[in-house]
Image 1 (cartoon, rainbow, N blue to C red):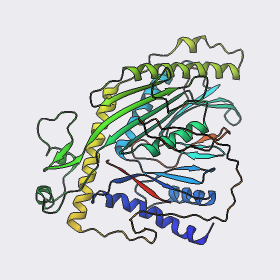
Image 2 (cartoon, one colour):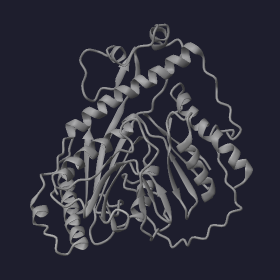
Image 3 (cartoon, rainbow, N blue to C red):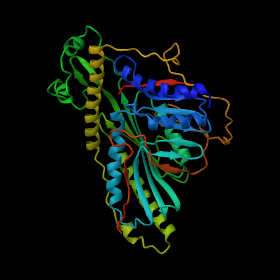
Image 4 (cartoon, rainbow, N blue to C red):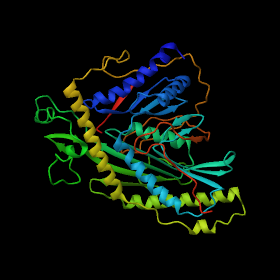
Length: 430
């Protein structure tokens, strides 16, 4: 690793964190994804270590690293971003807790933000479920029955590309879920505006409760959060996609057919097809568990397991309610950041690696020779007609590691022990 890269990585991370705060005070949208190219493995490992050990980063980014393409995707989650998979986790917990099986044979874990590592990829899905068969220290098999991602942004290409990479790394995954929220671009209040004159001189700053109380009395679900003549948070739509595996790996470019479903949570909810597809995926999870039990112990009686369980618990009203709460928190966060900057002054960022157009650039050493074979694959986007580039084709199965990159909203939680018996910045509106 070159000395220049080593000495600057910490500055790069501090800059990314500071950029998030400055973005809420300007017309720059909050960075959700930022991609870097030509990042050698040593630099990625150093970056991961700095993130895990950092005491100054208020919000720890999640990294997706492609060892074939040497690309690094940096994802900065938000409160709203975390909600769908946090709610999905509670549903999967309830479903799996009602299955009767010997937990000494199979360990089931439901993770938020755990690291998936293979020879070709390191990634942190928003949600991943693992079935581990056999002895804890010498498992005979690990299966990932569910992968899920959630993103609230104005462009989904990076999120879709990340999901493609995870599917290629784990091609036997039976069910994949993607929650796509389109958030309207946030702009800070302008000087001399009604908002500025109304809120800037109030002391102390409003609490969450008093801030949201400034909204109009009668609110509709589709209404943005408008206070003092300014929009602090607004969602345009929330869509859910579900794919289940057939005879071949899941193809998220498919937008219709027997193995995919698309629903709209907001506005004008329409989720019936999603419910049916999730129920099919849940049955596939149960069938997978039966097969694994037999593989570990051929004499194991799976009759109770096959007869057990309840209908998959789906409560879309609960998910929407949680999103509304997170939207209020996001609006208040926008307000506080603007208020503090407006009343105390803003120190503008200066960074040695910022180019003339204001984008962060991160270069990597070219002295390291990458020896893995790129055996090729391609894929298309699942988001309407958007298209992503082809990916390298990983062919090795890997392990799932508990992530030290946690979020305040339940990140990194694990449920287990069941059983009876060059940089480009992409904007978000959040």
